[in-house]
Length: 237
Length: 237
DNA sequence: CGTGCTTTTGAATAGTATCAAGGCCGGTGG
DNA sequence: CCACCGGCCTTGATACTATTCAAAAGCACG
Image (cartoon, rainbow over the protein chains, first blue to last red):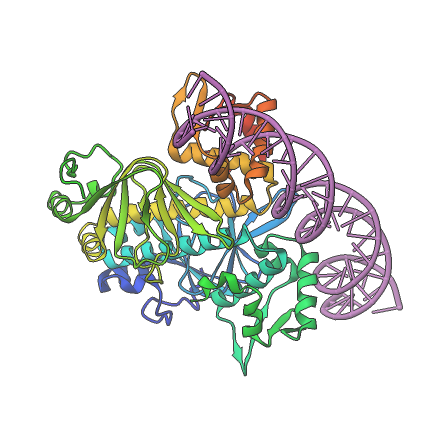
């Protein structure tokens, strides 16, 4: 916790944060005891196997939830950005089944389990909206599972680019969308290997749909790219 | 609604039902206006594209949530049994993104959206436990997505059998577990085709791990079967 | 100017989907 | 009671897709 640049709930500009749905007394209560920390790019927020002590809220930043694969590889199960929740409190297991780490500098707030429970018992809108958050994530996860069961690798890669764009709401810059992901990270989302990602990106480059500058992928024509995964369009709504 | 054999909340033997977490007044209130219906095997509960009017609770039975695939095929996204929730209320979209249908005769209760919202606003434990239900389902969905990204077809099929066993808590009968699923249904869970399911079942039969009698699959040695998907064991906890 | 890491590309291999044919079983009608 | 039909399951052959491995090119960094 960096007390120097600690952001109180009243200062916080994240309008989507669930805490803002609590009563003023509860906001103050949570504000006093909540943890807050700045995570640098690549830094772990939680690690697989650690005990679950509470829940993290993304105040600001980009976070990936990864699960270790056999052979040292990892899989990105979910991406989280502002106002998302991480580390579902006590879901059967007492330890985290996945790790979370910052993809860019991110500020996370931490609410301890007991406090979270009490806050839920006293703030119905808070609880209800968190419930709805999980409903939405479940829907997204189920859709992703459905799609990935029938898509080709090329489609998966394109879909992964979309998923990242949607989640991170990347900079819109004169008709083109900007995104920073390594081939390995894309592969970890798409559930394939960097080789295949490269092949797909080359294909997209040849068709003038994207252009690559270092780690930045510029999507020049998002509508043309959409067409390649057209049958799976229900998530674009 | 069959008023003849209508089961009131006070009569209901499903101890896991979320409604039981409400205050006595609210249980009575919900009891009075809730819908209830018996669905025969194969009957649709909700259909893709229909407007979302509320949420269904499985009082008793076995339900599959399916999503249509291109070419007429379907994919089983989730299985639901007693006390599970179906038809996540208003998750972004106003219409169901998937269909739900009974795999065996099932009794479902229906709670209309507005009533559900009011019940949530007045019963914190009710809301909190529903939230935790979704957290668990999200975790399961994410684990399944993770696994399916790296499993072979044989592993997927074996995992699907497990998933069904876990969810339906099938009859335990002198050391063997009983399950009734068609090859097509297994394929729809595993994300493959009936041909491959057949090959895997033949393999399991040869190794004396299962035996098949009509539509009934008897798992003779659950521990040996587990070994085939050993690296993916975290969901068996 | 090398060293190490990521990306790209090609070739060989393995795994899976698809197609087609045949077998098995239950139901129906002659 | 038997013959036929249709559905589901099984199995083999084939074609395709994706993974893996290896090598080379590009790039960042000390």
